[in-house]
Length: 347
Image (cartoon, rainbow, N blue to C red; front, side, top):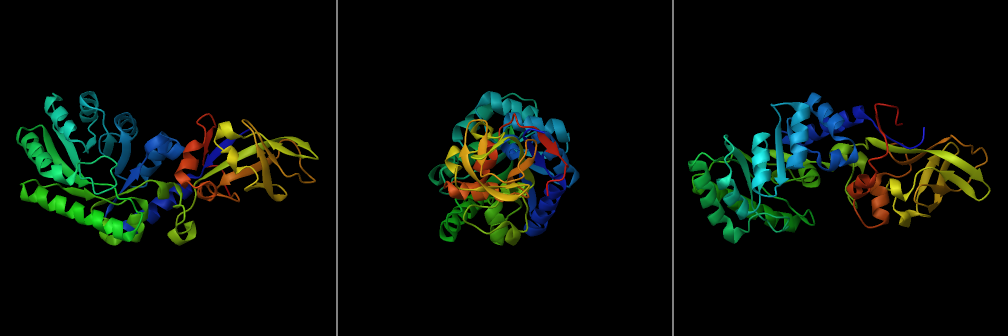
């Protein structure tokens, strides 16, 4: 063994079940952007489908098409990074649900001759400004959508938005805007089947935000929020473990074959422990392809060292909190050149 990223699929199943129980009766949309948060798209999507997940949040059209190839025709796959006419046409061809957060995309949709009706989820900007149609332009967007529906170009399947999750007060204001936007859509004669507003944190903490669907990414992979409740409190568990091998021993330290090019920020040197055969040891230096650990008496080349994640001294969020970011940012840094190994013992 050299470096491996081990994924416990049974732990993934348990997280999915925990999410389903927590947000019921809302449906879980499993967000699988960035190669399923760097855990491996195809394997995780197939496993989630077997576990009963029927909605997937794929971020962009290319990822949505990849999900479709794995799970077949019956899944609902939502994408929201759409670049224009070509993306719209490709998304319709792949039978994706299209998140529209820009009025210009409604004009583009009128130009697409896809031979089938587009499933549209219209996004209202509720204050986060992560795209979305501004409230003062909402009536105009509804009018354009009504024309697309009347012309057989689209069906309005959903309304959605992002919230900041910065404070309950901010989120309450955002929800009020969202509800007003939905009321305006209904008053305009549009009848969206689905509403979705919450992601992981709000989906767990605030029942009134769950609506019909909750978009849950990080919690699905056992990544807790920075500065928030712990995994045990949430009832989730990390599903992945980064493991590396001792390559050199000496009085000044033990060298392990994983480094910054594998995804460990160099600024973490001296700030966290890894788990060795002799117990936790402090990382004293992080180079491009190796890190140095405080020595132990029985250290030998070939021994396994648990770097982060499941069974480690630190999770991705633990490391993120040391450098002022969030756990998914650390998880997404894990290099794609590291083999993903599934269903091996990660305890």
